[in-house]
Length: 365
Ligand code: ATP
Image (cartoon, rainbow, N blue to C red; front, side, top):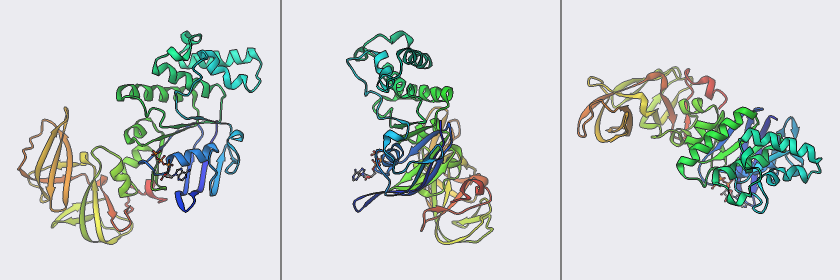
C-alpha cells in the first residue's frame, strides 16, 4: 500500500481548465474522499491519479515515485470503475481469478489468493455460481474481489454506490468501510454526497469549479469550513450566514449585528466590508432575553429535533433544537450563539477569517 501525493496538478481540455493547481496528500492506508458538486473535477482528478488522463502540469507521487506522465499500466493501482463490470458468462471464481490468470500466475497460487479474497468478502458459498444470477450486493462483492486480488498499491472508486437505492447504498457503504478497515488499503473515493463523505472518509478534499476548497478530517471541515462554499456544501441544513457590513479588526472577539454584540473566537486578522457570520444550526439557541431577535417563520418536525427558521435583520437562518422546545410561528424571540464555534467570512473572497479557535485547521489556508 502507498501514500499518494498530488502536487500543483492542473488539467486543461483545450481552453477549458477542469482542475486548477490541486495539492493534497493521501496517507498510506487512508480512506480518502474527493467531494464536490457535478462538474467540479473529481473524476478528472481520479483519472489523473489512475493514469487515464495525463496532467497538463504538476506532479503525482505514488509510494514516493513520481508517476504523473506514466501510463495506467505502470502505476499498480486498481480503478473500480463501477462495480457491476463483470464477465457475465464466467462464474464468480473465474471473474476474480481473471487478473491473476492473465498475468500468468501459477494455478495453485491463483487458487490460494482467490480463496483468501473470498474469505475476506464472505462469498465462499457463491464461488461456483455464474455472476448473471447474483444479487446486486453479491455482484458488487465479486467486482471488489477482482480489484482486491491483484493487491494493488491503492484503490480508486468513482461513485461506486451511485446507482443503488438509498437503503442498499447505506448498507454497501458500511460494508466497504468495514472491508477497508480490515485490509487497510489506501482508497480514493469520489462522491457528490456530503453525508457519504462525512460518514466514510478519514479525510476529505472538497472541490468546486476545479479548485480544491479545503482538505482535512471530516470533523475539522464541518467545524471550520475554510470557505463559504464548503460551509454551504457540508451539513444539512447547511451553515447559516448572517450578512453584515462593517469592520472587524485584528484581535476582535465580537461582531455587532443589528446593534447586538455577539461574541466570536478572537480574530487573527481583520477585514472591512461585506462580511458574514457563519453559525451551524445546532449552535443557535432560543433565549427570551437575548438582544439579537428573530421571528419564527417556519418549523419542521424531525422526531428528536426540529428545524426552526427565523427571519432576522441579517437574513433567514435555521436552528436545530430539541423537538420538545416551544417554537410557534409568528413568535419573536431572542437568539444566542455558541461563541467558540462561530466563523466569520469575508464575502469579497468567500474565505473564513482566521481565528484563535480554528488556526490549527485553517492555518495553511
Ligand atoms: P460528475 O460528478 O458530474 O462526474 P466531476 O466533478 O467528476 O463531475 P469531471 O468529470 O472531472 O467532474 O469534469 C470536470 C469538467 O471537465 C466538466 O466541466 C467536464 O465537462 C469537463 N471534462 C471532463 N472530461 C473532459 C474531456 N475529455 N474533454 C473536455 N472536457 C472535459
